[in-house]
Image (cartoon, rainbow, N blue to C red; front, side, top):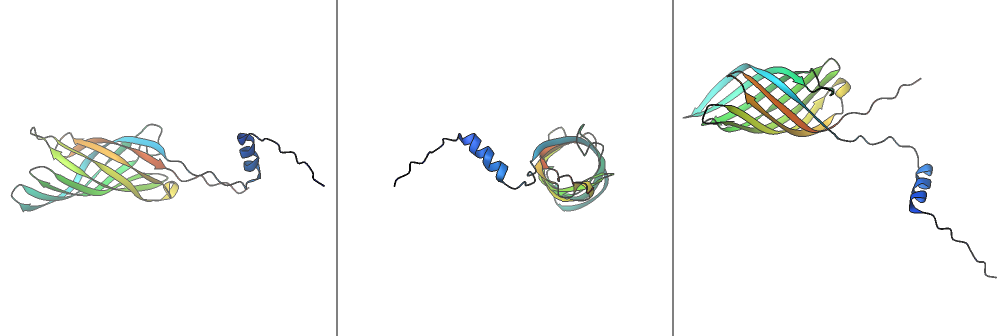
Length: 174
């Protein structure tokens, strides 16, 4: 004997909601969010090596402060360790920037280009990618861009912006 079955039409949204209610509860994936800041710095040490006419390689360190109201890195101490190779005042820069707060550190590798204009103003632009982090920043991932301009022979100011994924918060065990 033939039985007639009834097919219920279930709206896709309701079917999706029902499937979600049956799925195991998984932690939400961390999402990248825009983040940025401004910084000021001062060259602490510089070791020039003359490579040829109008060409010099500089190993230098600098330190400063990051500002970025509302970000976890607001007020962080910043340290740079870099190598700059200039020919006629232009050339590549690469190094590591480290932000230090009471809760931990985050470091990024960066690469860019240094330019000196006809008036002697020095600027740099480039990109960065997070490479290491400790403390509350352990697991931080990010990348973005930066720009800076020297305001004197040793002082500079700049900004950075990018996409950052902060580590998830740990749940308490009560």
